[in-house]
Length: 280
Image 1: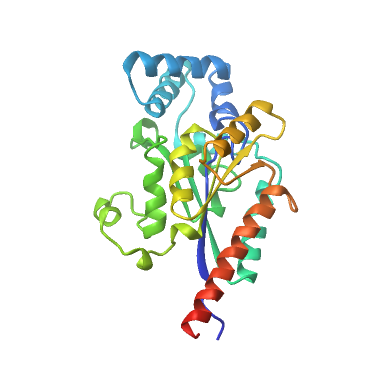
Image 2 (image 1 turned 45 degrees about the vertical axis):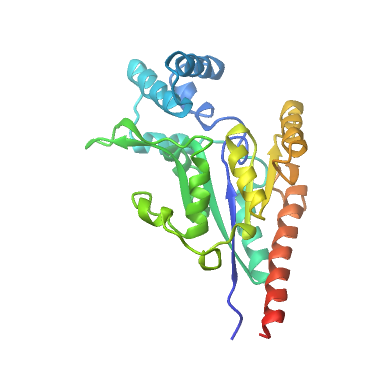
């Protein structure tokens, strides 16, 4: 009988991490006839003016502008827009290749997504099926399937909640008791030291720090052709938020792949060391 695989989670942000820019810029903002800069400027203005949460404000502006322009906002409309999201090089092939590498090392890789972007757009993307769970901001829909109100808004601090949900296996968002229940670290399905977090921006900072401080690996990626993005990633590294930086290039043999594979090797070696100590 082969030994049980060791669970490991790779957790991803979406915007700027798996796809360039913000997902709304690929299809939704063009559909409402706006420039991306103008859309986000209005969101920022309303956020400051109302001392509001920026995630709730962008969701509000999406619905308001769509209403004025007569642009449909049903679930299927958002999902069709997700089909138009452009991904970074190598993303589509990444998940299967990394999972296969882990399996060969005795490590069961689970992929998760934690994003402040729109769940409905992500669900329409070609990689939605690759994730065991997708945690993202989402709308509530009426009986006709039309978006009416935010059902969940995930900002930079609330993102960490979902790392604990992965850590504890508490994936039912309506069940607050399980996420708050005390569970000894040894009994948690995926220890933080078996977790990798990959992100790119300020909304990822609390997750970067939590995973790093708890013994996991945090990686800041950056758009390969953007000097400002590379400088931002370097700042995260200098500030001790992450252990590694890498271009957001997911092709085989790239720097990011080497970093993640090295972590898988470490998880596998730690398992074998533990088994040797226990006499297995």
